[in-house]
Length: 252
Ligand SMILES: NC(=O)c1ccc[n+]([C@@H]2O[C@H](COP(=O)([O-])OP(=O)(O)OC[C@H]3O[C@@H](n4cnc5c(N)ncnc54)[C@H](OP(=O)(O)O)[C@@H]3O)[C@@H](O)[C@H]2O)c1
Image 1: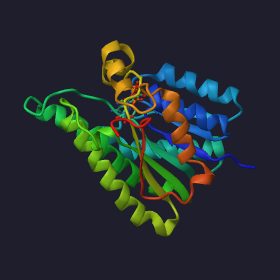
Image 2: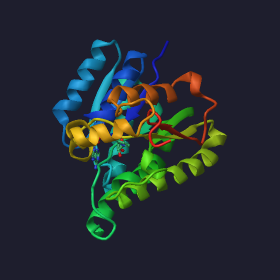
Image 3: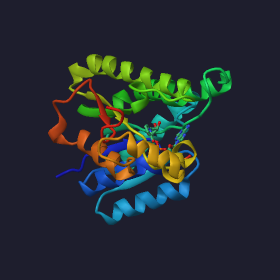
């Protein structure tokens, strides 16, 4: 049986890396992207290959739409040379950064960086990749619990995540005729490098999150990698146009 192929942006570390390995464990081949962590991405590929799937990594700056045409051409060539295929099955728009700044202090540069990587990037990257996604494929975008609850210092970041949630519903509507499902996963606070690693490395912040979470701890990469892999599984095919929060019940 031919393996499905998933393209995951920002898979050198954190949640993208975790999802990649969860998908590999389910027999899904991988096209991963990295921005600065080439060696880390290659290591993820090696781990995936050890699980019996094919994997390759490409460089992508998800915030630089001027290079997307070139990237899409690379994906096309990779599909043809490595898989003998024209299309892939699953797209996980995961790449992202956190910038902490109060609403009063956020600069236009910070706003632009966030909008480029979290909203403009997924919009135009997915648009350009559409011919390369199979009919009946899956797209999973990544939002945040911060679209439902608020903490100081995250106004710009959370606004972009709000945008990707609205975009998800509209994409689902327009891609339905091709039987492509589009959903958005909204993780709670997860212990990765994200935001300077504060959920993982700052004991006070970690404890505060645990106390605000029904399941009594901060999230771990496995919690989200499992859910991403689940949402990209055959069994999740009737879930469409939805925001799925995966936060252990944060701030219920
Ligand atoms: N961790 C959380 O608490 C949390 C909660 C809610 C939502 N999220 C969302 O989950 C996603 C992944 O976060 P994470 O926790 O895994 O973060 P992370 O551990 O910091 O990893 C970020 C990943 O994204 C890549 N990346 C960053 N900027 C990029 C850019 N401009 N272009 C391409 N790739 C880029 C990085 O690549 P390189 O290392 O190669 O540069 C890395 O692979 C993000 O969209 C984030 O907003 C995270």
